[in-house]
Image (tube, rainbow, N blue to C red; front, side):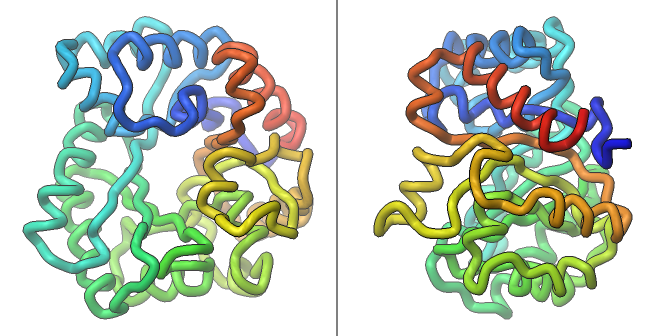
Length: 281
């Protein structure tokens, strides 16, 4: 029996435009249709994309209808940024629109990252606590993702920050690439110590243990591998998630230039097939 539920498998369809932020309404509709045509039931939506389409002349109702008409749910919205400063005005300006998009689509969770290479832990704690408050007001969970090249580089530091912010609606995003490439490698001990309900989302993708270049962020955005085609020990990771009782959203996020050249429908189908194989669906 698979740990994952079919209805919890959604695509981060930003991969179908190579992670571009400023896209047109036509481009957004294209990747929405490709996601549905590939058999996904939902998307992990980049709020930037909704806002860009609306800024380009579409109405919010039209953009949401593109998803609803194809039977696509939006259980999670990305991405909260700038909050690690702890500054309320910055957080409202940079994160407020993402929360509003999530509420508009009826999402359950909002994901965030730290883009800065260094952070002040106390300021980041205040910032994360503010995100938790903003999410709670809207009935939303907030989950954060560590990035190995950032000031929040690993599972241990991300979990420590969540504990310090001390809010029940805070949780984690586990990304396969970041799981393998975090400093020190996969941290099974820390993961086993985390209550399963705090694992809100697992982003499915793969990589090699050894870097292919000097710029990990660029590699992560252009050369991720399909789940199961790299060196992530998925049976071990999935086993721990099952052991701790996790029931996350499964959101494959395979940024890969070669796959992108195949076209959005082919890319989405290959991502779905590889993800389903790893998850045993």
